[in-house]
Image (cartoon, rainbow, N blue to C red):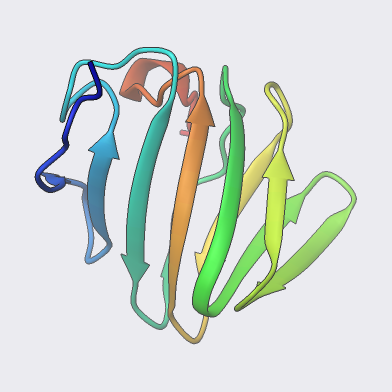
Length: 116
């Protein structure tokens, strides 16, 4: 039987980024995939990471900057980016952004491996 997800679960994170998880370990105990809407204000950034999951990101509004070992990508509204498991990436939103992130397997804090 299909499972209705009535709404997202807010995921607390340091700083002023908002994460609304629709599917994942927190909202419906799903471990195979996580789907979350992110809203990051202008000037937001996080430490670099080398996660144990593939992350597929679709930018809805604004632009997401994705630093990687060979440079920086600017992913604008209507575009997407794929960061593969084990790749080093660092996300930021110099002008702010709203985007959807899909992680396979599902996001978990202990599988992100953020830089110190």
